[in-house]
Amino acid sequence: MNTPAPSTRRLYRGGSVYSPADPFATALLVDGSTIAWVGPDEAAAAWTRGDEEVVELDGALITPAFVDAHAHLTETGLRTAGLDLSRARSARDVLDAVAAASTGGGELLTGAGWDETTWDDATLPTRAQLDTAAGGAPVHLSRVDGHSALVSSALAAHAGLPAPDEDGSAQVPGAAHHAALHARWAALSPAAADRARRTALRAAAAAGIGAVHEMSGPALAPPGDLAALAALAGAGTAAQRADGREPLPDVVPYHAQAVTDPDAVRAVVAAHAAQGVHLAGVGGDLSVDGSLGSRTAALNAPYADAPRTRGTLHLDAGAVRAHLRACTLAGVQAAFHAIGDAALQVVAEALQLVADELGATALAARGHRVEHAVAADADVIAVLARLGVGVSAQPAFDARWGAPGGTYERRLGPARAAALHPFAALAAAGVPLALGSDSPVTPLDPWGAVRAAAFPHRPEHAVSVRAAFLAHTRGGHRLAGRGHPGVLRPGAPAAYAVWEAGDLLVQAPDRRLSGWSTDARSGTPGLPDLTPGAPAPRCLRTVVDGAVVHDDLGR
Image (tube, one colour):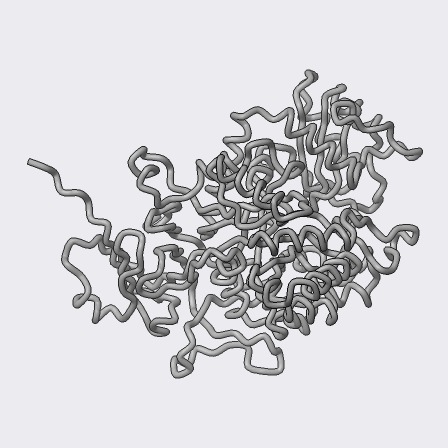
């Protein structure tokens, strides 16, 4: 006698469901990998067969799973095993941490998170000091923004780097940093890389994230990283379930490689497809410039705290134009990392040149994207909106560095810093917007990102909690062009998260208006209270394509 297969139907009831299908829904029915029905508890009987698993929500909230629209998974996982230097407050703290971790052998020592703008004395360790602390071992310590690092002489030798400058600083930015990253990846064992990927994907699942846009590239991850993630990630394939593999969040892959003609784009896409990687775009963290923290973001005016530098342009307008043109003609999304105002003007100029040649419609049809767009001004925003270019923004950057007297003001001065992260202007112009973390630069914390966009340091840049939430769920799917609706409605993929969330509110971004409402007559589904200081929702379960990737229900 055959044993019946377990039911793939699951009924949630007794909570709140964030759904455009029914703003007052309290129940959700899932059939396999698809949402079957959304509605009130009392109507569920008409849609059930009696073989469903019934889950009592006890007031919990179900939302679409979040999409992190910019992350580095392997790097995220590695940082859990390396030195955490986020609490270092001096060069001596960094050196003491290295000395304590050194084994005296030649094994690679990694760490990350240091930020000299939080130190009383911003003087960095010298390479000689780092060599002494590490006992001669190769050392790579990433700055918090990931755009520069402290490296020892042993690692510098592996990377082919020259001797340090006159000040002897162990810091390497720009091209030297990329070479150091290559050397670090070369020293990473396959087993350590696999552990890092699994660690990061599990952390994403525990944060209610169902999909991650992975920003990969030669200097950003070890060789073969995207193929390894493609084999590991995901939850819904029959092969994965038949093999009993661990279900994990989806990965949307991007590869940062500059190209100059359509055939080169097709070759990049085909080469990845042969490895089981279906690229969403060619680019991603294809860097036009660097970061404000490392003073490598390209600016029109000098840095306030370093008057002799305006940052670094890694790609000029000609290179950006060539890449955009090639991707547009090949029918592939292009994506660029651009933070400073000069870098964003380069992107805008290139966009306009390609639009003039190929037509605005052809350009907009590809749904190209810009990562970060921190210093986008009105002119850049207008170009992005007119040509259908989306932005993957990281509100946690503002939360961490945008406070009065913080890193942004130190680097740019108060006036220029006040213009950064124009979330409201981007939204008002109709620029497609998605939110991400740039993990490990900031944590995998989607509710924190929503809060930071709705309550930024400068209120004029705020969007509503609802707008930020939609950018972090539906917006991420749209920016990747994958056709996923990113909402909970009948027929949609079963990608959702269950939250312990407390009272649900409708919060307004304009401080002159009532900040919240619980009036059901509005017909607007409520979301958790994200007022600064309010407790963050706790993820109880995350589901991708009907498969549970994180489960804390009942614990």
